[in-house]
Image (cartoon, rainbow, N blue to C red):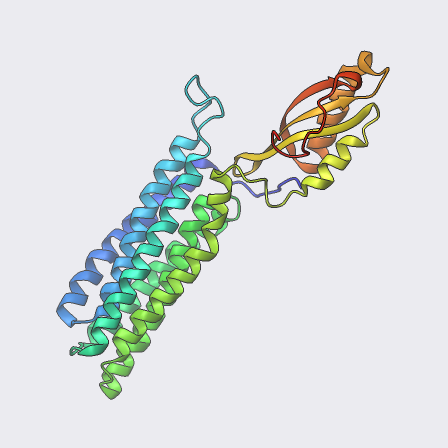
Length: 302
């Protein structure tokens, strides 16, 4: 179905991402220093996650700029898919980070070190503020962009991780429970992995030229075949040119005696595709009924 997303001015969006980059960069430095001084792996884990957020923000910032370039001789479909690539990179980095933190947390269970609880609580609180701010900056932008959604989920998971770090610091201060630090680290890692694996499928599907997930391809083909003068549709290819631009490439068989109506039939098909399904890019190859391909598949080139 057609998409309806609220749009923010590109410059305003870029400004928000830039603020988030600086905030996460400063926070990462503070958390790493604090984690080393306090001996808290959970704090360092949160810092590494924040660093990944900063890297993700930089990638997304660059991708937003590149995606706005017009199509040219080298990239005839334009540069919009660079944001899909950026999202895939960001989700992949989340998976790598999550697996590393699971390993480090497991090693710390063997011999939990002493942890300075107050440092953990103070820096965890600062991190919570920055993470919440960054999530807020990207919230309104993530609804219409898989690239920014990857960023938003990064920052949302950071905010929740910061809450866990603060709770861990309080427990260490009150009860000297050392194992809580690696336990929280593993909990943060598990959440990161869950987020990454649940979201990475979308960018992969788009880059693999999968059909748009919100379009019923059978319904689209049936609608085209209902157009007056159309006998059959085959060799259909559905894909996403960009995140919110669905495309269709297909063969259309024209009924006997209707070849002279080809232009009006084509117009009717394209109008229906765009108005009912939001497919604004379609390439149609027409065949006469008497000379149509035989024994062909509905989808693909079979």
